[in-house]
Length: 239
Length: 290
Image (cartoon, rainbow over all chains, first blue to last red; front, side, top):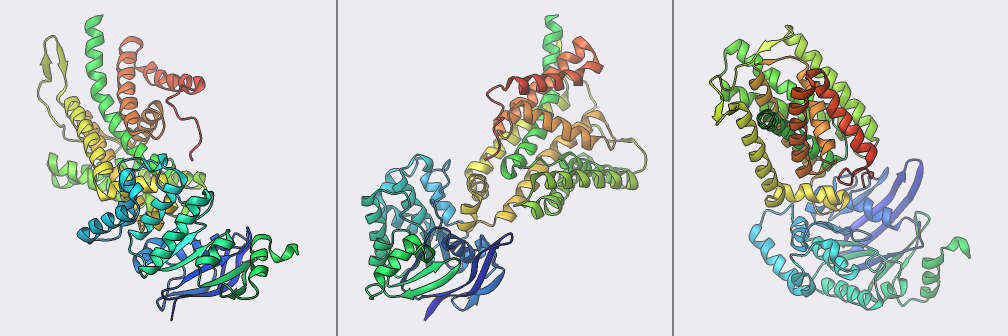
């Protein structure tokens, strides 16, 4: 059953359409990744699903309900959380406050406190730095914080935009290890990645986006993988 | 000479506390939205006129008048946000500013339509003798302004750093998109910030009007100008700076009025702002909003 179903979504910046009718599905309980060259519309797609950008056309069904054009806080409340590109932690706020902000729409104080403890167990570095300003953390730690912040809303679907961007190889491996762990815990994951090699190792299904449209989809390990990786980096226009 | 200096300082701190309150509200809006709200003073005037109207028609008492003033300012502030700022969130800062100027005129017209006499009496906060401190005197309403400014600082700090709403405000200031992605209803935070800022301004407006014992439609422009001036003197967008800026403006006015006369009083404040801006003093954030 598909948890997220995107149909013919068009999102534009002024007159320029960044998504020109993109359609894809994310199955319940899966890890799905979206590959594509720079400027293909990956971030636009994520921001549209999360409600920061409003689509001009098309529908976005989450658990059967159309969330296209709804306010971001409403979409978070329904169970979709996005870890944005470049992490966007609140730099002047403490690590603890960042996590509390992630649970902002929740009213179950006790369960939130329990989830905080879970985050500190999963990310021990965040516990050590709980009282520190988020802006003083390293890039990898900020990425962990951004993931933990998103998890504090107890999402059914976790969206991640370029989680490995600008991070050292060891940290990238840890991020992907965490993605696999979260998946084991039952969170469905849909992520955008430039690092196609790493992405195809964890993903169960992938889509390739080129020039605002889904041009290919499949399962890692299939014959076309090399071609997909090449196009994910370079785009088909530059053949 | 020394005696004059001390007395002027006491007087200046009193009015400076009112300026500090005005600047606090102004700064709160500017700090959160990065937009100048020219209707800030007009919303305060609206609250004060609502209270005056209640006083003229029903003889409402002091405490009730204070409540009506604050409630009126809050309503007017929320109205300004919805009308002028919400539609231009992503758009032009100038458009929002010009819209807020237009609404300022709206409020002034409304005030003069409903209350056509130019000047109305407003019940004084306290009519007895000022407090004697040896050879010097401190007006009771000045004392009330200082107390209100202090209370506003404590309350504002507590709200921003110890409440859920404060957490949301700081998140929106630091990363608006990330705040929305964390599940914070950003437009609603803006409305509440406007309401809070207008409430602080309303307290200032009430104290000033009750201290003068009269009200005219000029109160709107007066509040906007003093608030803006104090906010800029203290460095744009800093809450402690707003308090310092307000007190400094009050002291500057009190001393220059005594030594140079009332005509030069306002000129001196603008001159100082000009010099400080031209000299690019470090505490004035001349860098652009980011």
